[in-house]
Length: 282
Image 1 (cartoon, rainbow, N blue to C red):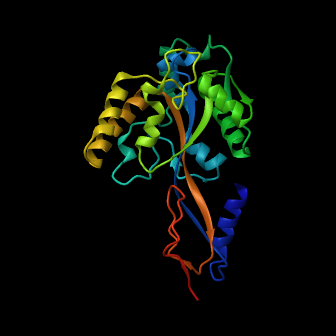
Image 2 (cartoon, rainbow, N blue to C red):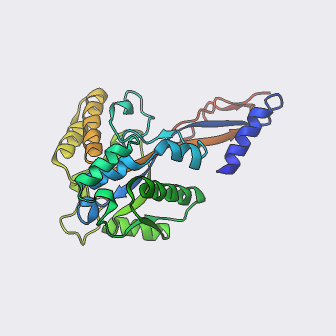
């Protein structure tokens, strides 16, 4: 928020008389947009790719979020917080208007012509998400001549819409339950997609189904070492991005205000607090 940035700037200016310290570190959270991959407009992979190339994530991070994030989402769905799991290996979608226009034409909508009305569903849980949504639709208009409107609804309604597949384009965020890239890849396992469109799909809201993805993901689950598991997980994640099943926006970070006399109170991406060694200095 703007308050956090103000506190951060004030803390840097008043370095001689610190009443507190502001810590910022990567969080086990990814902010992204879901496509409905099994039906409707975004069953077209080339259209998903056009959207993915058309978004300037770094501009959103710098200008809209005021730098309040760990990094732009130029790689995969997994945030840069896991040791030995290098997300730089995952080829995502860096901003490239020429590529966006190429895939838009390949999808059959050259110049944005012929596309029906598209809604981006979001929840009004904070001003920054509304600002990001507005930046996304502005970039899609400027770069692809595509009109997208924002549809705000309460979180519960948005989740139900996601579970029932009643969307084409929807904002989401995922906060990890446990510290492994597997927890993010679990979201897109095809075995979680029901046979009937009428049944709820949890947690795979995009209803993404890909044989190669599932094969790599399952081999990762069965691996005998972490290194072997990570190798399979990275292959699965690359398939996910090659298929443009989601549009990753940014990897989040967490802020913490702490008094200087609090010692041995380490921060961590999951926000799990272990106070067994924490103490106050004199």
